[in-house]
Length: 220
Image 1 (cartoon, rainbow, N blue to C red):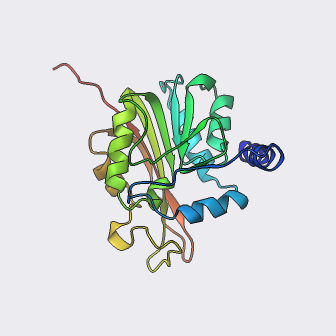
Image 2: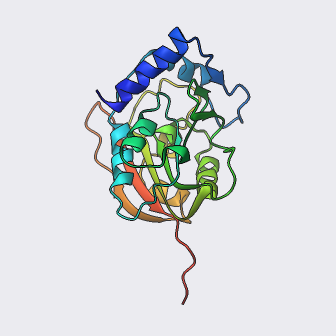
């Protein structure tokens, strides 16, 4: 059984059987949109390779610390469960989403992360920037809570020209963040150590995937 399947079963058990209330971040900044969409999708499980891509890229970095990890937008805990299996310290793993049923997923806004500066050695942000109307603000918050020498892995949706977006409050056209060059501009204070930007097949969609390192001050 895969981590994303386990996560969904945990969701059903905790919310349907044990009747755990789903916590909602009901007063986000204007940059976070489509709360109803996210809430509805809690009932429709869709396994997605994006969970694997970000986690496996992070885990493949030889000197990546495994003492602490922040996962932005985990929904059903799959990245959290995978991180435990890959050796991250369970006590140091946190998730953040605008909806949560899990004791390890905090409810909040990625544009105003509820964590102190340099709280995490690693951060994963899968797809979530595609839903932001202010990705520049979200990016600054991720950099703020990332420790010096830590790693950030970002995956974003890449769509073809003429793509009809079903969500009303997301960036479109050239403003939509979906290329490595756009990510490099957002995270200009970090050093990119890996990046993948495949072509989008006709009528389909893809992902741009990047890993960044927060560089410490260097002598000389």
